[in-house]
Length: 316
Image (cartoon, rainbow, N blue to C red; front, side, top):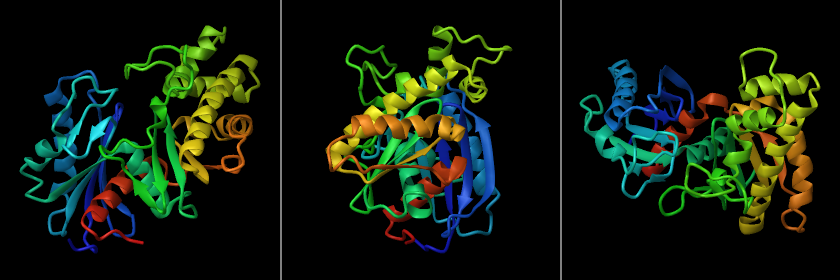
């Protein structure tokens, strides 16, 4: 594969499906976004993916698009090319790579699948906040909580591509059930919807109809004690998950991105504070918390980088 040619990248989440061309320097063009029909059938979700692929690749006529990289909500199975996203009910063991490869607009190009958390880690380690570190956890805190690992200076996929999925690490043995089938998962306490649920259950009274985590954040900035406590509770769950990860694989840093992380110190300050409480062993106590740098484009940048790396043409 010619490393100078762009890669078509697709980022699949429970809310939106994005696509773009990504060049060898990580610059994006031909960006397109559609809503994810998350409650639709398997074919309806695939049709949305096809629309994105079509928009990106047809607009790239004359350019030497070398591959298609996909970052998908998980779990994924990169060995089989299939996905079973917790937040897309119609996709269970869905043969995504096979179906994308069969699209006429793909035209026989190589298709490479990665989990969205791993794609985030790839982007942040290549061009973002994880670049100085050989061992890091990169996590996204948004509608869900996901993550990926950098170990020994390289992205670590795990056998099926799900390593680092901190959102489904159990940190409360008597916690609430999670849609993944587990109990007490980080995601049940630290996602945007979880923060909003917590605030409402503790008596937060939103001034209008907006009951989202964004509204809770606005209330917290205004000093609402219930809203502040909801963010503190989320940060405590994240700290427990990060500390467990540090104890297992000795990470140096945790990079935090996603919509909820855009609240800045509302989340990061209590996360740093609680991490001191949970990560007390000497080899884990030095983990630093830094905000992600690649924003909403991280999934696309990372998916493209994974596709290049799969063919041995990854940029330094």
